[in-house]
Amino acid sequence: MSDRPIVIKNGPEIETMRAAGRVNAAVLKIVREMIRPGITTKELDEAAEDYILKKNGQPAFKNYPGPYPYPATLTISVNEELVHGIPGNRKLNEGDIVSVDCGTILDGFVADSAFSIGVGELSPDAKQLLEVTEKALYKGIEKMRPGNRVGDVSATIQEYVEGFGFHVPREYTGHGVGRAMHEGPLVPNFGISGRGIPLRPGITVAIEPMVMVGTHRTKVLEDQWTVISADRSLTAHFEHSVAVTEDEPIILTAQ
Ligand code: MG
Ligand code: MG
Image (tube, rainbow, N blue to C red):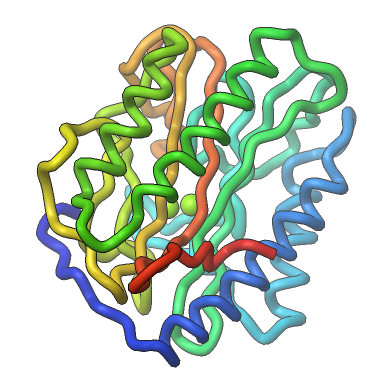
């Protein structure tokens, strides 16, 4: 992904991305409210696809090129699964951490966002993992301003997460988003302040802290999509698509 171009968006394009982002946010809200012990990940996926199609959007992940075309609308990743879990007949259990990632294409632009949540009651450690990962997202977004560089976003996320003894993966990163789901620049969850591409108005990126309790290493399961923590420790993932402006960053995938 590193050589993909950065595409600067104008005001109307950012408005269109915001509209796509609202649909994506509504999908995640619907899914969040469905999550309970006993529900299958496939049921969540079907509800998401139905809603996107009803809004005249298209699921951005479905058929996405990879080891084989991605087969679903959502990625749903449970516990040690960090990202790219494929929905299926798995039933969610009390105490699971479930991470749901969705992409919507509307009027030619992609919105990409994700959240993690506990199924029923979580252990205090698991709760802390979710809080830290979500807070890392907002700390990263706060750095999305002209005058800063990508490294400022990356270093902020890394330092915050590692301050709690947690880990960020090296192989999976945030990314530019626009007419394509993956554009430049890459926005790693690790980096050095003051380094990297300067941020300027019209840059739109998906910021997505992915956090693992025990290791920064990952593995891909035999389905060739699902990414897990190499030590099978718990993981969490939060994501928003965000636009840099002259002043405050705009969270495109807010409700
Ligand atoms: Mg995503
Ligand atoms: Mg993304």
